[in-house]
Amino acid sequence: MDLKPIKLKRISDQVFEQLRESIFRGDIKPGEQIMPERDLARVLEVSRSSVRDAINKLVTLGLLEHRQGQGTFVQSPELRGENPLAMAMENEDATIHDLLEVRMGLECNAALLAANRASEKDIMLLEKSIQEMRDETESGRLGTEADVAFHMAIAYATKNPVQVNLMRSFYDYLFVGIKKNLSHLYENPDNIKGILKQHHAIHECIRTHDAEAAFAAMQRHINFVIEFFKFRK
Image (cartoon, rainbow, N blue to C red):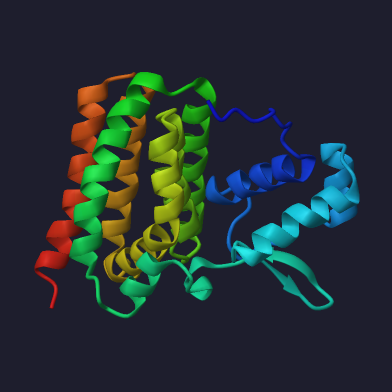
């Protein structure tokens, strides 16, 4: 056997993972500024060099961007361009329907697993994202970030690392697709109320650990959007 010595995970890698998860979970949203290096180092109880290494890695991946004289901000997925799925969406090589077909497979199963495995913290994060989306839409904004955070929270609630990794890779595409969905659905405010009602239904099924109902609720949610675009020219 070709065995190698076990190496402890570098501190900068642990900082990187925490910041990356905060971005994907929606704790810090596209366009928002992250804490300065010195503050992050103090909160995480690590050196500034470890924080700097982690931030530089996130900048290289396109998740963060440095703005001269302003600080470091979460980069909007629309501006990254490196994700091939998001690029396909932007270039119209893939349609909204293509995206929704993939989401149907990924997210119905995720809702089922989340209903079986979600912790109290997972359920709280789902509630938080629904409230944030309600606040955003009532203020006349799309609520894209909160909508994406809701779907990512379900992925994390599955406790399945493969599902989480798939959704991380899918994140840019999900963001671009949801923003397009909402921009069209918003033409009729009742549609947004419908989306929020559907999110509530999914959340309730997960909260009560009703797996089959969670699967069906997610299926209805995605079908609602599919039907909307089916009759849209």
